[in-house]
Length: 445
Image (tube, rainbow, N blue to C red; front, side, top):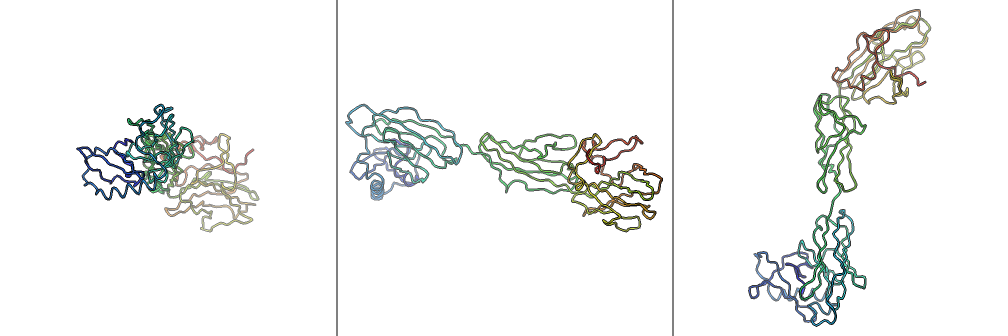
């Protein structure tokens, strides 16, 4: 007799536990009639059952159908009495397994001296008989059973799910049922829910931003934030970290230097670790920085005027004369930007292959200077948030001379200047009180 701890074959085969049990002599039992006339008793659950007992006719019909479909090839299902030989024994304990959701699992149950007894697999969490000998009782299509033709019965669970975790019992239907139990722990790798997580974010400078990353998986689950470029994450004006832990990343009063890609990384020790890339764009009006405010050169020479623009979104930029005449690329004027020049030389002598996306270096080269070329030149930048310009005065001298700007037009506030930007500045040798940017157009030696 199989002891299911409250299960019965008909409930396992039907996939639900709504079948009723009747009370006989103050005990709750089920009598199952098989095709060969044998009767087997299953102990019903001791849980309170509010339902009324099924009619005897319906029970007989159901059990008869089950016997015909499943046990037509099994001549004996009840306890084998008077078996000759030693009692059956388990060869080894069942394994406890930890598997990743979605994998296929196999549990092995080895029995010697089985004789005419039967081996069944039972799922303890639901007290459901899964298989008996080579027959599958449950209607779960992911469950199967195989036999090695010797003494091992293998229970197979395809594409295991979290709901499959728990204890699995291998039972021999001796008078006093012999059992072995193995437990399966199902772990789920982390997954990031895009619908509940932040997408790319655009914010105005000095506003506050919150990035969200919603992840699921087997607990404990950890969510960490990093910048893709490896720079520090500025939480606020006093706190900057290389990594932040939590499902939310709160950035207080973002600046242009917070612009970039942020990585949300979810892990729980179950591979693979997953990540989501969230891009933060910070928008602000343009600013113009002049490298020299006053430049002198003789007639017939070639001279260059430089300026730096910072803007997000990208600004429309151009050069013009003081009378408002816009200048265009021609034999007289050569216009360049840092993106077309290549590596930029910093004051320390190292080359910098790229600038922040919001910064652009401009150069206007005047070829074969004539008297009409002398005057004021404007470096102009415009975007949807405003306009900025810087004026450079070009005058006649006997040799090329430059004067570092005594003030810089529309510079960003000091609080917005990062340490990285400050490293790009150096003191002018001729005037220790003035500052200038490294020449972005110098060629690499």
